[in-house]
Length: 126
Image 1 (cartoon, one colour):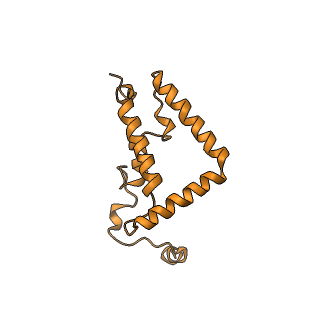
Image 2 (image 1 turned 135 degrees about the horizontal axis):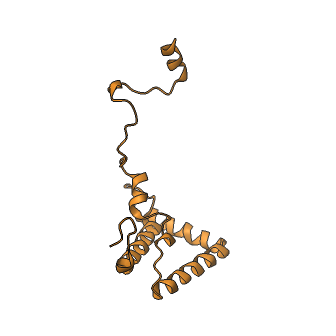
Image 3 (image 1 turned 60 degrees about the horizontal axis):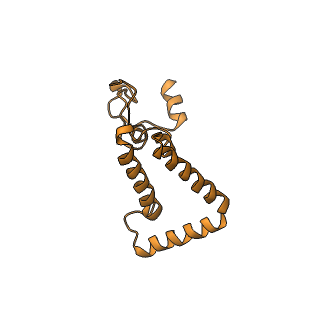
């Protein structure tokens, strides 16, 4: 076992399926919100297809990158950075409640609200 050097080669197929399905789900339903209905999903799909038709060079580069990634995966080279630049727990750290164990303000301040008004702090200092 390598500490601090995780080996994901055993889980490559499962991680690959998860990432591909997550991408497909986001392509279809991403950023629609809870109030969206089938018309919103249809409009999103329509606009995506129009965008793909207007940008064939980008879509060709994407197809080529996916093809190369699948070939590497078939040869046993698993590179998770193809899907995300960091591992998924590193991404979660930025999108979910804080995982850092340092405090953002002194515990002596209590629950006083922090003001974004610089003149307030100038008055306090004087």
